[in-house]
Amino acid sequence: MKIALIVLTFLIALIGWFKPKTVSKPITISMVILLVAAFIFQIVVELREQKEKAKSLNTGVLKHDRILVSGSQRIYPKMEFGDSGTILVWTGPQGQPLFKIFDNNSLMIVIENNQLKVSTKIRDPNGHVVAELSQNEWKVNKNNSFDRNYTKNALEVKDSTGDVLLQVRFVEDRVQFQGKFYDSNGGGIALVKSLDPHRKGGLIEITGVNHPTLTAKIEPIFNYPSELHLGELK
Image 1: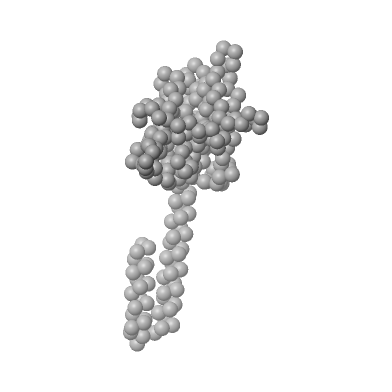
Image 2: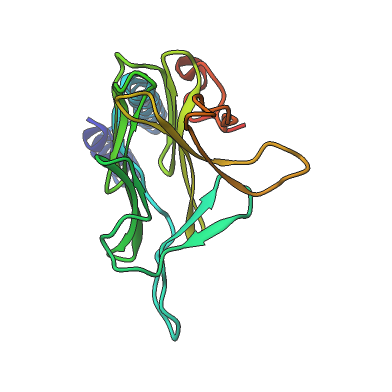
């Protein structure tokens, strides 16, 4: 439709310019203005439809804008605990997990085709899958999540209680990651940014006999609800 409008506008403009006796200039100008207006209207409608569709999506692909090209020094996958400044560099074999989380889950960050790619699975305290990441392809279980928000290079997911369980954002040469992981027995591990002003940096919290519940919180980086604030970072 848009291509047809462009071609039609161009043809009418050519006819009006080179053959003014065939179509008068006032008519030519009016028709061009109408076609340009129709073209703009078409774009506005398509953008609105895309935005409405994006509001209901529970799948997508995160993209790392920066291309990681190895020079004299080898490039390694990097993970930062949120924006804490605490960065882990994985120098082990590619394809091996950065963190092994319980028996059936892990956090894996690799460089493939000069791009950072993240894979992991997030469950709620009841063991239900809330979200999955597989080589940056993400999927959110709408039945076990409260809300989610995203851009082309960031994703955040809240569980059914409104608690942020997953936060991923690609910046420069690394991925900023925060996550709360649970197993089917209610055990938990949190990889988060410390919110204690006296103890800044990254934090790893693990539940146990004397510490049965995760207390770490992940501050949202998006505005909510996503239906009204899709893609809006704080």
